[in-house]
Image (cartoon, rainbow, N blue to C red; front, side):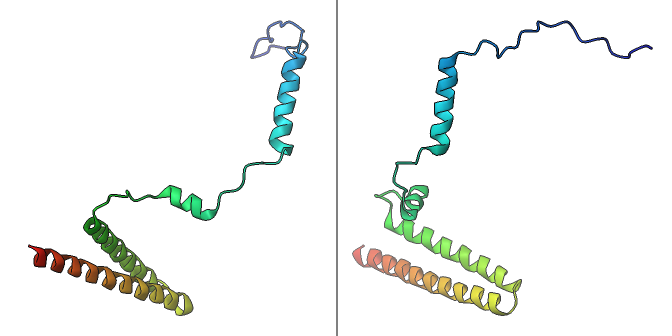
Length: 125
């Protein structure tokens, strides 16, 4: 009978695991046990700490620029909420519309802040 593939090559019968270094084995076992069984001693960070690390506003930011950015953010949220509310029915729609109205209130407050900022600049000029 003819084989399509040749016989595997002759190899040394000695296993690569026959001469294990006991020190390396011990270190690997300790590392695995520590990873799975040793309790984490670092105190958990609060969710507020994690959230504050994700985004930051520079301390010396221009107040007018902050107000304008806030206005743009509220505008975007309002548009997204209106689009979302159109695709919903009943209670979820009412919830989306309530959040939309709150974002519109924030938008009005920021608009007033920008108007006051302009009035101060005009009066001071």
